[in-house]
Image (cartoon, rainbow, N blue to C red):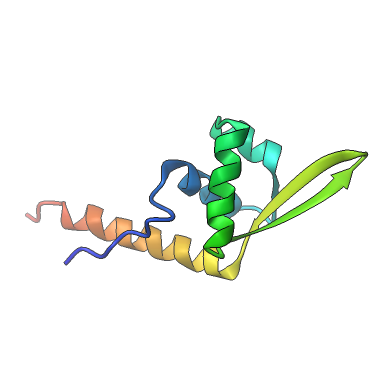
Length: 99
Protein backbone atom coordinates (compact mmCIF):
# COMPACT_ATOMS: atom_id res chain seq x y z
CA UNK A 1 0.00 0.00 0.00
CA UNK A 2 1.22 3.52 -0.77
CA UNK A 3 1.60 5.93 2.12
CA UNK A 4 0.31 9.48 1.88
CA UNK A 5 2.90 12.10 0.97
CA UNK A 6 3.05 15.11 3.28
CA UNK A 7 1.01 17.83 1.51
CA UNK A 8 3.17 20.56 3.08
CA UNK A 9 6.32 19.12 1.51
CA UNK A 10 4.66 18.00 -1.71
CA UNK A 11 4.76 21.58 -3.03
CA UNK A 12 7.76 22.01 -5.32
CA UNK A 13 8.97 25.27 -3.76
CA UNK A 14 8.47 24.17 -0.15
CA UNK A 15 10.28 20.90 -0.90
CA UNK A 16 13.13 22.87 -2.49
CA UNK A 17 13.43 25.11 0.59
CA UNK A 18 13.51 22.17 2.98
CA UNK A 19 15.96 20.32 0.72
CA UNK A 20 18.30 23.31 0.86
CA UNK A 21 17.93 23.71 4.62
CA UNK A 22 18.53 20.03 5.41
CA UNK A 23 22.23 20.43 4.62
CA UNK A 24 22.94 23.68 6.45
CA UNK A 25 22.51 25.10 9.94
CA UNK A 26 20.54 28.08 8.62
CA UNK A 27 20.11 30.06 5.41
CA UNK A 28 19.30 33.65 4.53
CA UNK A 29 16.14 34.46 2.61
CA UNK A 30 18.21 35.87 -0.28
CA UNK A 31 20.17 32.59 -0.55
CA UNK A 32 16.94 30.60 -0.70
CA UNK A 33 15.44 32.98 -3.27
CA UNK A 34 18.51 32.73 -5.51
CA UNK A 35 18.77 28.94 -5.26
CA UNK A 36 15.07 28.31 -5.88
CA UNK A 37 14.69 31.06 -8.48
CA UNK A 38 11.43 32.03 -6.77
CA UNK A 39 9.97 35.49 -6.47
CA UNK A 40 10.34 37.14 -3.07
CA UNK A 41 6.56 37.20 -2.61
CA UNK A 42 6.01 33.53 -3.43
CA UNK A 43 8.98 32.45 -1.31
CA UNK A 44 7.66 34.50 1.63
CA UNK A 45 4.28 32.76 1.42
CA UNK A 46 5.84 29.29 1.25
CA UNK A 47 8.22 30.02 4.13
CA UNK A 48 5.24 31.16 6.20
CA UNK A 49 3.44 27.88 5.46
CA UNK A 50 6.50 25.89 6.53
CA UNK A 51 6.74 27.99 9.68
CA UNK A 52 3.05 27.48 10.51
CA UNK A 53 3.53 23.72 10.10
CA UNK A 54 6.40 23.88 12.59
CA UNK A 55 8.93 22.69 10.01
CA UNK A 56 11.16 25.78 10.10
CA UNK A 57 12.05 28.61 12.44
CA UNK A 58 12.32 32.10 11.01
CA UNK A 59 14.40 34.81 12.62
CA UNK A 60 14.17 38.40 11.42
CA UNK A 61 16.89 40.85 12.40
CA UNK A 62 19.05 43.63 11.04
CA UNK A 63 22.57 43.27 9.65
CA UNK A 64 24.38 46.52 8.81
CA UNK A 65 21.06 48.42 8.87
CA UNK A 66 19.48 45.99 6.37
CA UNK A 67 16.73 43.54 7.24
CA UNK A 68 17.85 39.92 7.31
CA UNK A 69 15.64 36.85 7.45
CA UNK A 70 17.21 33.58 8.55
CA UNK A 71 15.51 30.21 8.19
CA UNK A 72 16.44 26.91 9.80
CA UNK A 73 14.83 23.51 10.03
CA UNK A 74 13.26 22.37 13.27
CA UNK A 75 13.55 18.78 14.48
CA UNK A 76 9.93 18.34 13.34
CA UNK A 77 10.94 19.57 9.88
CA UNK A 78 13.88 17.17 9.71
CA UNK A 79 11.62 14.25 10.67
CA UNK A 80 8.96 15.29 8.15
CA UNK A 81 11.55 15.55 5.37
CA UNK A 82 13.08 12.16 6.18
CA UNK A 83 9.62 10.55 6.28
CA UNK A 84 8.68 12.22 2.97
CA UNK A 85 11.83 10.92 1.28
CA UNK A 86 11.25 7.41 2.70
CA UNK A 87 7.65 7.37 1.47
CA UNK A 88 8.70 8.67 -1.94
CA UNK A 89 11.31 5.92 -2.19
CA UNK A 90 8.54 3.40 -1.47
CA UNK A 91 6.60 4.78 -4.45
CA UNK A 92 9.63 4.40 -6.68
CA UNK A 93 10.48 0.96 -5.34
CA UNK A 94 6.96 -0.38 -5.81
CA UNK A 95 6.94 0.81 -9.39
CA UNK A 96 9.87 -1.38 -10.40
CA UNK A 97 9.16 -4.63 -12.20
CA UNK A 98 10.63 -7.58 -10.37
CA UNK A 99 12.46 -10.13 -12.49
